[in-house]
Image (cartoon, rainbow, N blue to C red; front, side):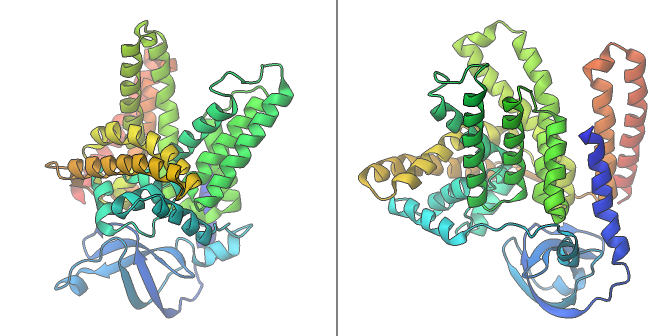
Length: 445
């Protein structure tokens, strides 16, 4: 199974380049580092995820003594320093240059800027313009640090990064438009019609992925849509852990350095958790009679949002604590506000871009502005609630131990093992041991 091949591929990509480059000499050079994360506190230094031209993403360490009388750098700040980048700690560097099979594809920033100007021509301004541009185009040049922090603290930072949420909305729109809400959906036996519909969807989705920058999150989402549509053409159901593993393997074969990307890790962790939990939720919902009523559909949506949010948060929690050192406490409340607004703002923004500065575009732009204003203020309100974030940092080993405990715990609660109490109890033993080990290491840190 592809799920079993993924750890092997990850191990090769992680350890072979480090073994190969262990004795490479490091040269001291001057770099301009752009901070891309909150500080990770350690006993002796502050650690940041940063980017520099020609190096990709690296860990930047600042000794505590050097920042005693100065404020710590914030997300988006630039630090100019003469230092050495060690290849065994570099996330890309020589590893990317030597082991990429193909160069990473780039997107057309000038095209993004021209489309972004169409939003301005439709009357959008300020933070609402920046939010709409980030959601629809992946254009983040006008997002200021305060707005970014507002979304991060409230647990809505995933909305600003084009990912599965955005591509899912676009996919639903495409499917609805091409089939007129299901009225023109090709019959099951009409293979030509099914193939033509799937090919159009795949082409549009990849065009959108290229426009928004081919980031790991959007590539993962569009690649999964592609695999699902190919499965439909072959009369197969393909949305499973195998689909996720296949998407990860294909991405790493083309861009191995994405393995070190926080976006890649968060994207696949969240998707895997959602797939594992969502199926059980759907089975439970389908047993209920109230799901066909209007109130039942509303309750179904609320419960679905809560379950998906919990699953995604649980799946990404160890990475979040390790990479960002903080946890958003009101993520459920945030998603109940943000999800429906994003589902409306993305199509409104795309229509506004298409119409531009015409009178109809300005009219639709007013609705787009209102939705963006509601989203920004909802996120800001949640950010200012008491205890909106908790600072918690775990190291790499603690992260792996926590994931191992989650996996064994899930196996203990898996429906296939519920019918065999002995097997479920057997999986609870390593879960308890791993949980105790995590607590011991966390208390000792």
